[in-house]
Length: 529
Image 1: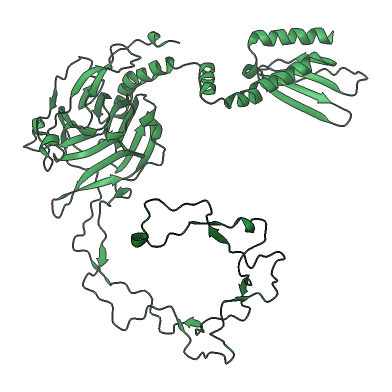
Image 2: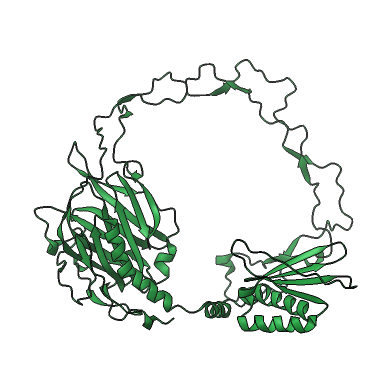
């Protein structure tokens, strides 16, 4: 199948939704590019001057399918759009999904979205990194650190201050989503029962509870260690102490060395006592600019003595050192349990003055806009089909009409299995060995079996209730009898000798085309006759 058989049709939102953006109008209508400057940054990099465009993917498999593209590298980008109406966390779930394609791969940069908190002074034209958000969600990568963020800002009910809460890391391996240059669908579901799910391509890669799976936790501990408590001076934390009643044995020799010369060793025969191990290099010459007044008397550099090359050794022979069997070292009293041990001291617990208990963290701050505030070292990041709703069926329908169509087109354009195998073998020649062992060898076995010896061939039929295999035995005087049973999808080869029966199962469709299968049956029929 070729990608031209997949015709693009813009997804149409059905059901309740807060934003549905496919960019198929070809414009940025409804979107606001920030003209603000980033605070606490050098003037030359403070501006949000990264470029955005609405265009098709570079290698689009769906002509007419446009998306939002981050066009600049090493620049700050910020763009946002108002929702149809603010989202209020009440009795229905929040579902946000959108598509990302790292067309050029990704070195260091993000592709996450921010759900901007509804505030009276929210100005999308001044959207910056410090603009309050309720949720931040999406992929982010730098080096070999692959992240899929889900962060929400929780309001402390006692102080009114906000604190970021980060979801635990996904257990799944995320690397492929950043490197395969395919379009991936990112979905976040946050439920009124405080559970959440993070999905990629409609498969859950992370899930948990807002109450137990966020860092730092939503609710602080009820008790904390007393910061004013101090360890008593006589508190004994030593689990073991030296035995005060122990005494050093009279025969304990603390001065005995750890090693002594081996008295049983003998000098090897042929040892050259009068030959030094190193000698001055006879070929070395004093440099012409050598000044003995300044540099001292010149000496040739030392080189190994050639006379020692065939000898067991040169110079003064010394006995090798061995461990001293009488060595004991410095005596120390043995350790015993400390009768006064009080354990490791810890400050006492007191009531946490900052304690609160929020059992409904799902009820986050309402948000009224969706924004992308990004910096990337890689350009041409493609975004498409932003969708926010409170109904899972509506979200799934939008995903199938948008991302599902892309997936079908990308799949149709992929090379066949045979082509992929050949391409892989060109890059990795050792794969030919694997192909021979897994494909060619079974073929050779079948050919050898079918073309030699006495063969009885039987065909079985598939019944409604169960598949049965049957074979008609031909009595011959040969030492081994062979049978072939051809089932719908399997060659079953049976070799029967006087005391052994061997069966070989070969999947028909794996190794034979229908034409070759028919030829083999014809060949075996002739042999049987």
